[in-house]
Length: 203
Image (cartoon, rainbow, N blue to C red; front, side, top):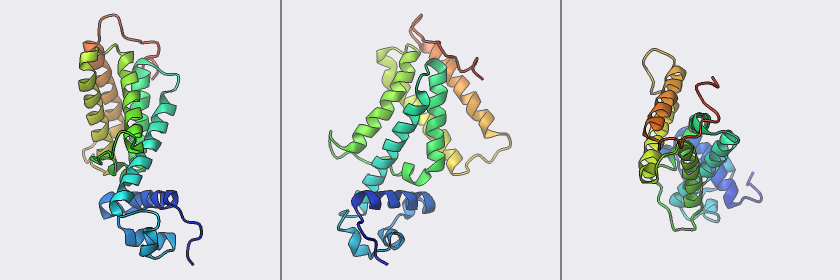
C-alpha cells in the first residue's frame, strides 16, 4: 500500500536506518523505496538523487552526534569532559555505523549548509574539551585533529568488529582516554588546566 504523506524528512530518516542495516556503501534508492512502500520514481518528489539522500543522511548523523556529545558533556570539565565526549561519540558510531559513514568526506554545499553547521558544533564541543586543558591557540587545530582521528579510528574499528586480538577493548578504550589526558596535560599552557572534574578520580 502506498505511503501517504511522505516527505523529505521521512525519506532521509528511512535512508539512515537502511544505511545502518545494510552499510552505507550498499545504500540504493530501490531498496529504500521498497521499505517506504512506494515506487522508486516517487522518491524523486522529495530528493533529487542518491547524492542528495547521502548528504541528508550525513546531516542527520552529525546533528544527532552533536546532541549526544553535548548532552554527555553537560556539567563536566577537564578529563571528565574528554571521557564523556569520547564515549558518547563512540557509542553513536557503534549504534549507527551506516549513517556515520555518510559523514566521512561529504562536502559542504556552502556556509549555510546544515551539515557544515552540525559539524562545526561537534568540533566546538571538542574545542571546549581542549580549552579545559589550557591548550594554546596555536596548538588548537592540531589537537582537534588528533582527537578526531583517535576517536574516529577507535569507534569505526569497534563498529566493524575490527578488534580481533584478545583482551577487552573497553580496557583499551579507558587506557586511550588516560593516555590522551596525560598527553594533553603535558602540552597545556602551565597553570591553565581546569581539573575541576578529573577522569582518573571519577573512575
